[in-house]
Every structure is written in structure tokens, then in C-alpha cells.
Image 1 (cartoon, one colour):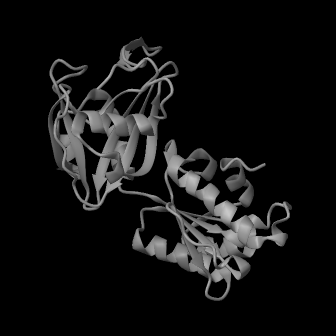
Image 2 (cartoon, rainbow, N blue to C red):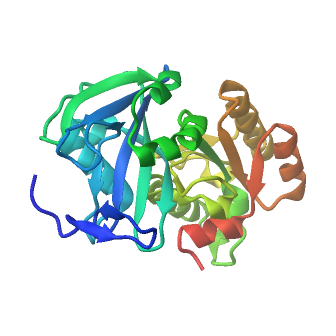
Image 3 (cartoon, rainbow, N blue to C red):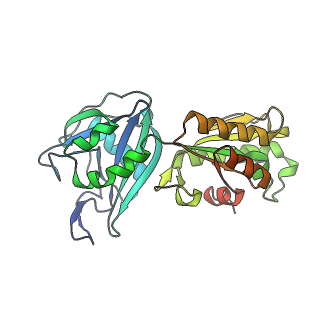
Length: 288
């Protein structure tokens, strides 16, 4: 582990000193059965002897989720490839911030102390975390983190409606326009989307993306991060079916569909999902 330009304490506006000149981040890893990975901090570390999650200072050029994954590798031996990012939450003090990034794994991954900062790594049931002697900041954040820990976001995109919302010549090459939309969505799956823009709690969400295609775009293939789903008959019914299935399979999750079709938006709401217009998605993926 090398020295980062973010290593060092910051005198915060809240009156306390915090580790990380550019803020800090940590990874809360959650399994499908509801266990989380917690770290017993070395006594000589800041707030030592308490339990928290692997984390530390961010570098000046580092995104919070990248810092969280790096710290988990450095302190707990957790490989980034094993983690599916789900959402993130920021404690913002103005002059300093800490971002907790929640990641999902199917089963507990092997974790071990790999730096002096950890004395023990332990998988603990979600409902048992509060019984530990927690780091004060982690204890303050835990109620919200516990509420959302197992949730994820499913983003269902009505491709024909979104592509058709911009007069950019898509009608000359519907396949190519849909393929470009798919690639933009794949980038969004990697970087996450801003929670506030989509009416979600927290800071960022990394969505499970379902792109519903029809007509000339039915041959567009899936790509990592985007499941392309051809509509068997009409696209609207396929969108509604995906929303309804996602809501029934994981009732606590957020399910958001993107379309401007008012009738379809009413059907999405009846199925238990929410919706946003194409303009919201275009702004997030950087399309004017």
C-alpha cells in the first residue's frame, strides 16, 4: 500500500479532525442471505478498537466507489471483481465527507486482515451489527444503511420511446440508435447514476438495467451491464411485465422505468414501479 495524496487529517468545520484530506470512503459488503463484512480496527488506528467497514482516505483524483474498493482490497483482501456495487451514501460535513459504498455478493467472500489497520474481519448478520462496539460515525450512519443494505435498483428502459424522443435522425438507423443507447447505459451501469435525479435516497445507485427493444432494434445484443430484452409482441406490455416481476421478486427494491408514454407510465405505477421521462436519462448519460 503506497502513500496517497489524501493521507492525513483534516480539521473539519464540525470541530473535529477526520482522516482524509480529500474525504474518505468505505465498503459495506452485503451477502444475499443478509450478512455483512465488518472490520475490527487496530487499537493504534483512528477510533481504534471499534468495529466499522474497510475504508480510508480518498486520493484527489479518485471517485468514492473506487476508493472504497481499493481500501477493501488493501485492508481485507477483498477483490473488486467479486463485488457488485449497489448504492452509496455520503455524510457531508462541508469541508470533509465520508462515503459508504454498499456492494453485494452472493456468498461471503474470503476476507482477512491484510494491513496493520485491521485486527479481524468478520461476517455478521445485519440484525447483529448494532450489538458490536461500533465506530461512532458508523454507528450514526447504521440505521439508514441497515434499512437500505439489501436493496438494489432495477432500471427498465423503453428503448423505442427513449430513442424516439430526440430528433437526431434515428429513423434512418433505428438499430444503430438503439445500440448507442445501450452503450451509454452500459457506461451508466459502471459509474452509477445520481440518486436525486431519479427520486432515490442516498448518493448514487448502480442499476440492474433492462433495455426493452422492438421492431428493427430486436437484433441488438446484450452487453455487460445491460440486458437487452426483445418484446415478443408490443414493447409496452414487456416493460410492464418486467416491472411487475421485479417488484414481486424483490419487494424492497427500487424499480424505475424510463418512458414518456403517459399511458405506459400509468401502467408502470399500477405494477408497483415509478417512472421518469427520457429527458432525465439523457441528462444523466450526457446527451443534450
